[in-house]
Image 1 (cartoon, rainbow, N blue to C red):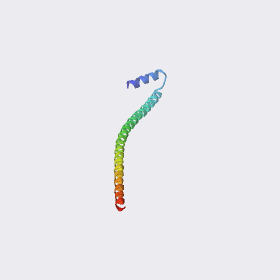
Image 2 (spheres, rainbow, N blue to C red):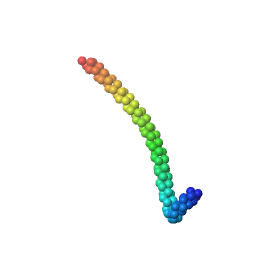
Image 3 (cartoon, helix red, strand yellow):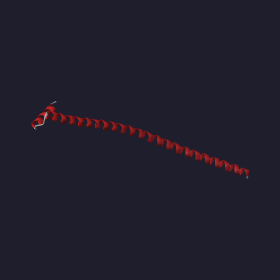
Image 4 (cartoon, helix red, strand yellow):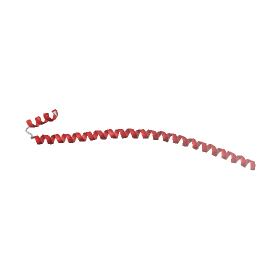
Length: 96
């Protein structure tokens, strides 16, 4: 309230009318509302960013684990393939 009165007195001393002072104060209120909205938006975006970073971290860990499992399965498949080839070679030697 003190700010309002100070601004009003300042404008009145400069010869501005009361309605002009109110218009200027309305403009300040509009600006303040926009700034408050931007502050809320930045806070929301920061929260969303942190959430997405956490989800990304979890997915990267899952991908690393899945890749490791896949490599293990490929190696096991290759070992099984080599054993089958070895068994087939033994069978071929028996037939000859």
